[in-house]
Length: 419
Image 1 (tube, rainbow, N blue to C red):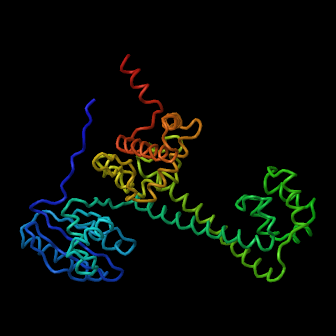
Image 2 (image 1 turned 90 degrees about the vertical axis):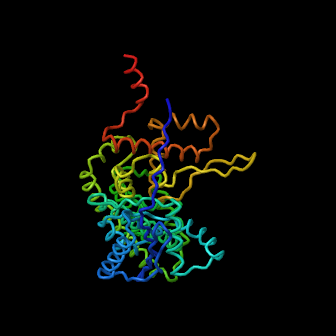
Image 3 (image 1 turned 45 degrees about the vertical axis):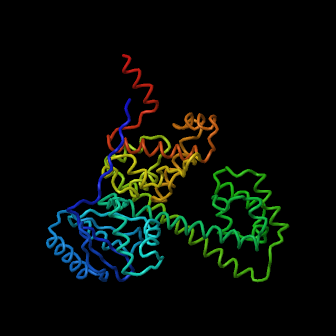
């Protein structure tokens, strides 16, 4: 079978106006360049509706004067500061592209043979990168996909906040009841969390008594906590070496953190319900969910990060977005090893990595493929990354064809051909 290579789409031509923007918190800097090299001096404009409208009028005026047909607007990957302008321009007849900050940094060294960074130099360099064809097309999430992106980002922040608070409790409980973690192992279990909330010190557990402690913990754990573990926590409480000076202040903070963790848990649960709600509004989401090992939260994150799978025509495009595209450094007789670029959306790459972990487990859809890679001598991490790339290809195909996943498709396909 002949392999077809996707044609590279030329970003600019002799009828294209390049608009480069250096994003700032309050003030942006714009720059226009025509195909003949004619340009205008970079100029500032503020983050506001009137300023955006004036900026757009300048673009149209330059376009008319130079008799150009297409407009490409590009900027560096930024945080939230580009969002208002980003969505304003998404409604205009322009093509939005994004430039990797690493590319502008390296090209900046060539401009004037100096690493000098100024508001007038940066947009020119961005325009140079676009002209060279090294910009990535930006897909603006709309409707349910936009909601999923925000929900995913909110869940990521809430999860990080929850993890930070759990780590703080680890440090605090070690001072007042250091034996606690030796017995309970994880403070996120229902039993451990119940004790932290109601009986966080050795003295309070001893005062409760073994029989009462046993009844409470068996009720909280639904009978899963064994007597040996309960006896272990009680014995540890009787012989605890926790400090006494300043203990009340530490307990006050532990109580505050426990309360905040409960609030974060409720918020995360609410976010996940909203994800499920918006996921049902995207037709091809059910196709992705048909893959064993991928849950709703993960699919919501994937669609939120990609924006719209339908906007990507080839697999290499979406591989680049995820930073899973391969590169190597070879010279002369030296053949370098292949690595992933890691220059795409880090959260998208992480979600795919977690999916790969789920699918390579025993009875997972990628378990056999993973074992074959290991048998050939491939390191485990590289094998998981290879599975991540395979998973992305499968998801891309399912989203485009809006069909369900069929395990052992190759074998079934060959049987059908033989029949």
